Length: 381
Image (tube, rainbow, N blue to C red; front, side):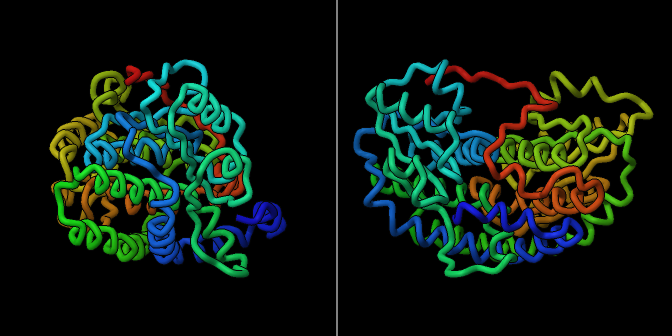
């Protein structure tokens, strides 16, 4: 990605940025398809799965959210224990076995904490690869890298906005391709490759369908009070997406907003809902194992007077149960973050149009957003 893309976008009047971002988002499905194809051609030269006994996915900000979302795909497709960590946690607090594969993720390839994590992993004797959108970055100089960026020549401002908005999705697409590659090398895939490829090819169309919720999300935000409290809940692959939603909203509204794991909310934060509180509780719950539990928690929230919003698979269990539903196309649960993220991107764009506290692309510089959630430490592998 050209280093001056951010500076070029900053020169555009704020009143035009939201429209520009929406136009860019319309191109995301096509761009994700290009990244999937491009990364596929790079894998055999970058990833050696022979020695790996465990996998660490490492990043900051949006890159960490992508790592959290992809973790379950790695475990399911490769059969290897996989842990998603923030870069600082790996660099300073994690003991790494030398037979680990560490995948460090940074769209710019210049984030100091992520670069440090890669160096620590190499010193421990681990195999290290990078996922980046910048070919000439320090990350690409220090580690073999997958370049997760669509093949564009001289893109216009809409393409530039699409590139910045797509950091999460492009990194995630590269991680999915890597998981499939490792699973195939280890003969662990439970599905025929033809079926997996068909599932991946359905993702761009599902993204295009989900973008059509733009007007409905704008209308929803227009009707929300400035005093509302927001909760974004997810489980499994959707937890990283919930944190992405939290980050996008916080950047614009600068008010309490919470990204919480579904079960953690049920055990620790559900009791914080108060009668009369203007609570907007979002459930990012595509078709899968978490839907039954989401239904239980959703009913409890509604009994407390909270407004419940669902991002869920078309025709799934949550349809008709939530106060408002934004449907995504039918995709497997492990790949669903590529589609579930779209309402969050729309949410951030329309929040920018309403509050405009910060440009919609600011978080793409891999800032770490920790407001409104507790950092939970998972046991080291």
